[in-house]
Length: 328
Image 1 (cartoon, helix red, strand yellow):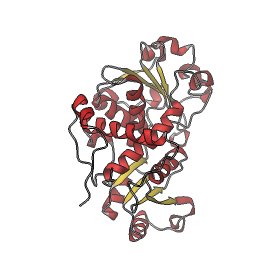
Image 2: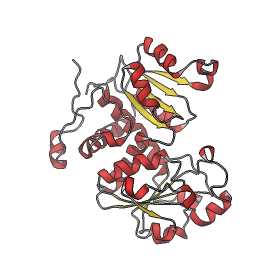
Image 3: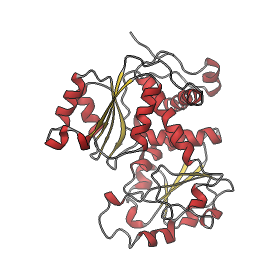
């Protein structure tokens, strides 16, 4: 029987007082299924994977013989490539499924697609789909573990984990940090997963955006603070995250124009004067430069936007290793 071998030294576990959790065969639908201790363990595992990614020779044989399918039914660049690179770095075989050139275009159902892929011996599915709940369906039809790479407006747990890792790496802890997330809160699966994960690690999160792009239940459901004024939202913030305006998920009339949105909510030197000096600048990508964030901020010394991409590979490597019982 394959079991998880610890990626983290016992001394490090003791220092952080982390119990060794069990990940073998688990699904990653969202972070509400994971405890604070489990999230911290994933971060520590990702730290080890990042060290591997900084080597000259970046490949290890830990998942040799395993097959991972990236089942992407919705467009993606960084997330799909990050999953595939993570699997390759661990020496797994990768089956890359893209809906635009698949039998889905001929009317095949998701259920039959999964049956077909499963017959090929897939061990782990990494799925992106426009419909919430699709990862659960893939697990139901396949009986194999599933990592959610984004399902509609619902959740994006690996993005949240890499965001959390990026803060944790720089700050050492999220406890009592003030994190402000600005933008299209209504349509963002990223913000929902981040609110769950960050709150478990003790961050104080404020969400900010136009009223038409703000769900009415944010404070009661997620325990965050809601602000419509950007200056008030950014006051003494330790971390500032911009969100993409998801025009593909919007109906008309939510705001007058992108120019009007930018006038009130763009992240710039002028608006960030309210945040703490050297506040971390983040964005899950892709960015609309000049709309959500100005180049002077996206490319500043306090920006970790490019590092977020690198950290995403490490986080996904860690999850694959833990779920498939990789050999240390």
